[in-house]
Length: 289
Image 1 (cartoon, rainbow, N blue to C red):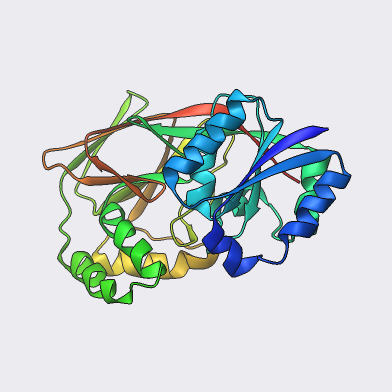
Image 2 (cartoon, one colour; image 1 turned 180 degrees about the vertical axis):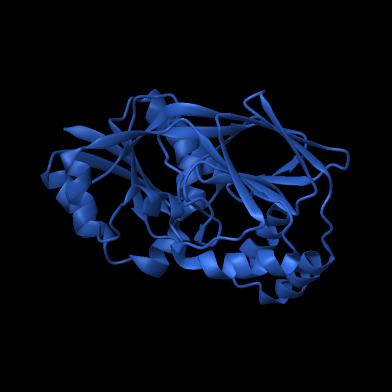
């Protein structure tokens, strides 16, 4: 039998698919995949679980949770031959959405048994992997607090509003593939590996997860009102556009600024600019329909 390590975040699992685990595992077992399951919401424990799976040469690792869980588990599989299965049971599931994965557990189990896989690109910013997008500026300022709000800490909405209203764009220099230089005073720049990030925002509709290129989305002359309207329009994976946004394609991006600006990778704070980003083509194997 093949062996699968199943890493589940208990919070989204209990919220969305708590009754589906036994049938899901039973279907896999009947199909020849024995599953070892661990429940953890701690980053370090997830990292250890994936490292153990790689060391023990499991045939498959399955991540169950939202994009944060998927990103954490996937980071441990970059550059290996072990494919990643995804059970999308978070709030937005941007990675799963970009890959066309079903949420129905029976269909997912059937898909895992079929074993069809796709090699996708991985972003690297400084020493951090990312799978959705990295960013610098306003979104990096807001994302960590927005996550607290999403987890029920609604009193933090005031801080989100305060940071949004009082954020001032700074001069940035963006170097694309060591060839094209863009100087701008933009509120934010997003370097997208796939179409979606954050709260289901369709930030780069043209982006493909396996073409070896980023979509570099620059909010060049956008006001705070423009940005707020854009994110309202693109929530729920919907498409929209703004004339103040320019998009470039590149495999390597460098961002510098006189004033250090906050940065994130898949919504996780990673410090401040300067940033050096590159794609790692087809560095992760994922089970897909």
